[in-house]
Length: 179
Image 1: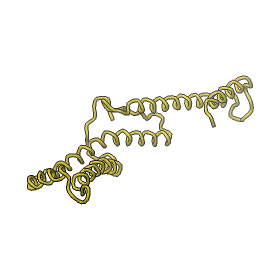
Image 2 (image 1 turned 45 degrees about the vertical axis):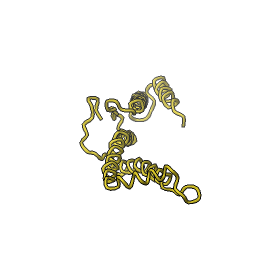
Image 3 (image 1 turned 30 degrees about the horizontal axis):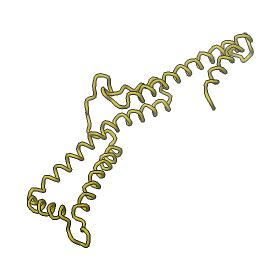
Image 4 (image 1 turned 180 degrees about the vertical axis):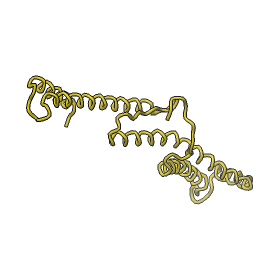
């Protein structure tokens, strides 16, 4: 993911997710075609074909030698769903990786959405959360350092006022969290 645009290096980013997404998208088209065929070819009232069904049967009989175009059309629908899944699965894959890094302790991770990405707002929100956590951890580290200075290496209190101030600062930072 980059600000300058996204160059596709691979068609499948997360193969399992993308193929599942494409199959589900293509399945909707297949279900629609099946429903249309049932409506067109289903028996009419009393088992007789209706006027539309007779006309449709004649039309399909006349063009039956040209029905081969359905295979490329279905392949085109599937390719469009794969490309569409790339636009959805790509950012989700990036989000997963970034959040795994954050869970692993890397608070320098940033998400950069692609140009025209629908998930730009979510990426900005995740980046904001990472920034806030980075600032909180940094403040905790500074307060811990102040507390260690006030206590000294032997554990005895060198500066009680500084120790109380550092402890209050730690409490304030920890108070931002609901545990």
